[in-house]
Image (cartoon, rainbow over all chains, first blue to last red):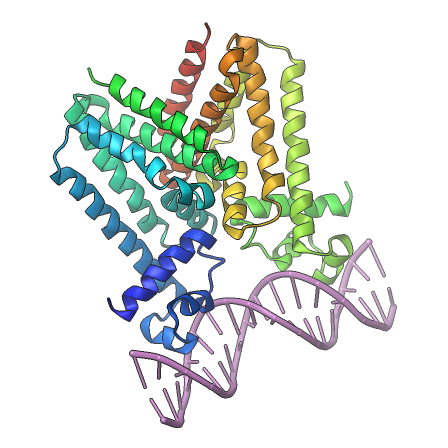
Length: 185
Length: 185
DNA sequence: GTCTATATAAGGATAGAC
DNA sequence: GTCTATCCTTATATAGAC
């Protein structure tokens, strides 16, 4: 793993845990164990490293989804896998929210040029979920269902973060899974 | 209206539009039209003004909810009023997200001492919604339904902000209203 | 590639004149 | 109450030695 990759990995974690604005070069350099001066050899500006982090997250999630696709379970199982992210990543979500949603919200407030790239992460899941709902037999409203589920998972992440409530997450996860099953025509 | 109130109003708007961290004293002082030095006559620290903004938001929402209560419509109409916030404040939400959710998320990442106070805003709506569901005849699971609706509205706000999509908001609002009506035993 | 040193700006906060 | 001036710290960014 290259030093550049180390930096992106550390920045990814820190942007998630502390937010983009609140994370300084010193924080990232410190986490990687290099000097601030050396940092600039790898990345010229903060926006440059944000782009790299977003690209890394996109690569990551694409890999995850194509892994799921290759295990070719039925669409309902795939949807369930998506919903279960809230359980699998429950601890992190309770502490820091959803990495996609919180970054998107922060960049919107900063009116940051990378907003569009960050939202491509949402689009990735939206399109993948839409495919699952199509395969489930809901081709006529697959995008609507995808957005609905995406919204619900975002809302659960936000409130799980605010209230730090495991039981609430589990309850909502089961409710979403039931809702998804009910969509089968 | 006192100068102090002017400052809180400006800070409220700026914290919402730009985020707490990204808003400087200079921004607030500039918006109010006073010098940075004068600012410190009214508020000693940034945390102090955050407390004042949260207190103002809490007062504001309490007034809103008690206004609704005094018009004594049926609980379903009250719930509908809550859901309709997404329409009424649609433009702002598309640009800056939900003022409650985005502040809560930001303060969580900053691990800010005011987290608890900010989340009292969520609790205010949670308890009020729970009352409505109780009055609707769902006393046995009123808090669960309240959290469910709160989560859904948060999710819609997050995605409306990311995708700037009016049709999506309207669709989800209708869906939530239908869901609420379906809860009547 | 990595470091130290440094330039430059911004933000939070204070002192003291008016 | 309001201002200017100032201090301290942090943050982005660069230069240049090794």
